[in-house]
Length: 146
Image (cartoon, rainbow, N blue to C red; front, side, top):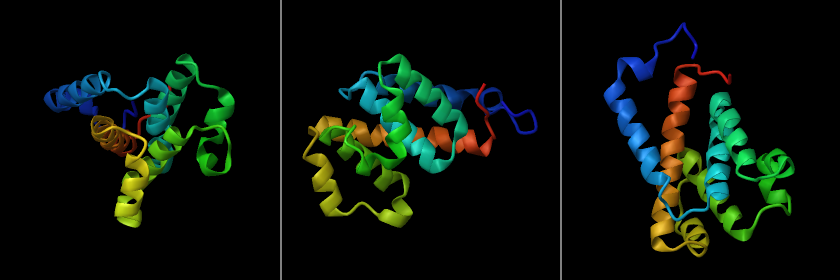
């Protein structure tokens, strides 16, 4: 953690604990672990959170993803390396991460929702919201990869 900024974990342990609880709940979701990691990495790339990109790229590789796919993630729309379900999750990730620019149109929602059950759609949206919150902590408190 960057020592020039506060250690949010120490000064607000109750809210940090709540975030960890949300992360634990997401660990019980129906979403495939690799898909969940792709969502975390893509949102972190868009938000410029180096700490989270590093952490989740490492987790993704440990879970069996390939370096080739991770390197192509920023250009996922132009590569053949992602399934239609993963593409839908990445579209929803970009839509919600950039919500002030993209908005969440009915057309995009329907396109994405066609690949997920109602529960999975809710869990995907919670996953995106959660990584965006973690990204804001990482960027706001200047966390650096170790």
